[in-house]
Length: 469
Image (cartoon, helix red, strand yellow):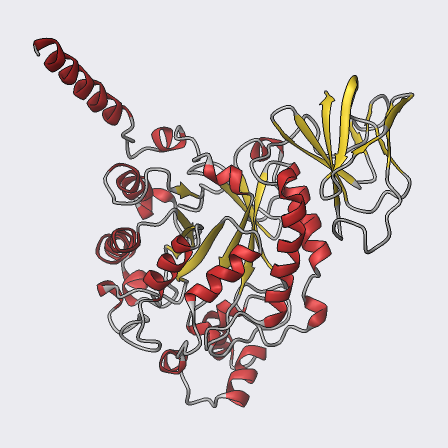
């Protein structure tokens, strides 16, 4: 009995020490030392959702973000002219304020279970919804935003809670985007310190406690350094003491100096890190590209079919991002009544159809020793890789996946893989082993002659290689 008690005491002590060791200090050195939870780089494909009061006007100048409607409208009003002001006055009348749109946002067709089913069908593994954009309107009953949230006005629904329940029921990771700043909050405009202490931090803690998200995705950080936002203080609270899951994923937008430098996974937006292209050091860290199907995140009625990228383009983007070690967070912008536009649904289903066949070469993979097939250049040329960009690589365990962005006709010629004598090749969705041969410095794979109807998928084709290095 005494021995059993001693073992129990030792076990408790060991557990306490482990828990203590997992605590994070409110410093970037401590928080940056935390590894991004494994589920995040395994997931590869997520859905971003921009939905708020801006869904009522749902308009923007082509090439711009419709969710910035209020900001752009005020800018035009101050100048006395501009396209946003002209549209607003023509469509709604000069007497209508942006705040008046809140009561017009009804979300009467919003069905979180329907959304979850669509995202599951699309092959997404995690979802990120705007809990509060720069307009300050909250999608949960937050006391700091009294009468400027989805329960007090507009839909009169706890959209955040409905969303979280539906996504988790569907087996999806789910979390929230949150804007640190608010364009026209009087406290933010007059006293940033008080805004942080009395509004932002209590609001963040309320959201985390209310929803327990798997992802917390910051934005709107660029006006001030992280010290002003007190980011390390409440990030440490999230990691140490909040009811959020211990494997919560955090991004890098916590101060004007933090993108690509501090926090959890790094982020790009339409291929950019602020104004700079991501470099090699950036890509060695877990990272994520976010972008819309068109030029806007929020639904923009002004965008036509020409602004929407087709499924092929988005599948190719997903492949190239994953080959470089990243995730794709692809945005949808629901309409004011809660529908995801049919063109967006179609694109998601097409991506999901491709992933059903080829997901093995995407999910849980990591970058291979090179991202794209080609030949290394030296000498008078700038050192790098000469490639036509048609074949990209991912890896999982001892398997390498060569992903061709076009049907390779009769043969797939690969320069990078160095095959052993017992190497094998299969085409995902086809199932039968393919013949191959070494020819000079290339590995030549015989591609089966398949009709369009016989092809396992469209848009890109994944060849699984074993026994190569």
